[in-house]
Length: 132
Image (cartoon, rainbow, N blue to C red):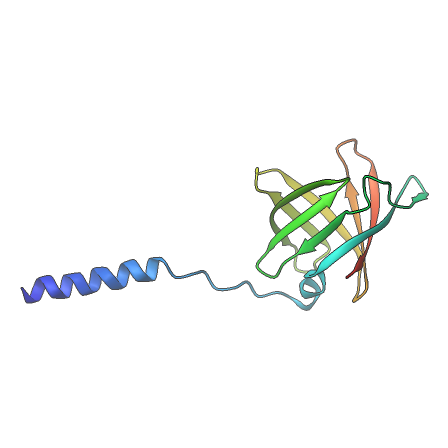
């Protein structure tokens, strides 16, 4: 009986430890600058600067400190997880469907974000955002 109690206790501890959450990721200072909601303000492609279209009026991107994101681009919303290199210049987005996209962070400060995004037509789009 004593062995059964010991076994049950050990089993209980092992099962509980399996359900512990993974530790929160450690974010660099540059990564922390990204973690907020950014509202789309315009774009530039082929040297042509453009204001948001009617379709893009509600576009935004949010990077969260738990490494999840949500992005509304051209009126279409997606979400998933994000990672980046140590300098926080190259950001990889992995959608919940498993599609990976890469963004190049050209500028980020407390009020603005500029990213270079190569779309499905291989056109580089400089996307500009402001913080909320």
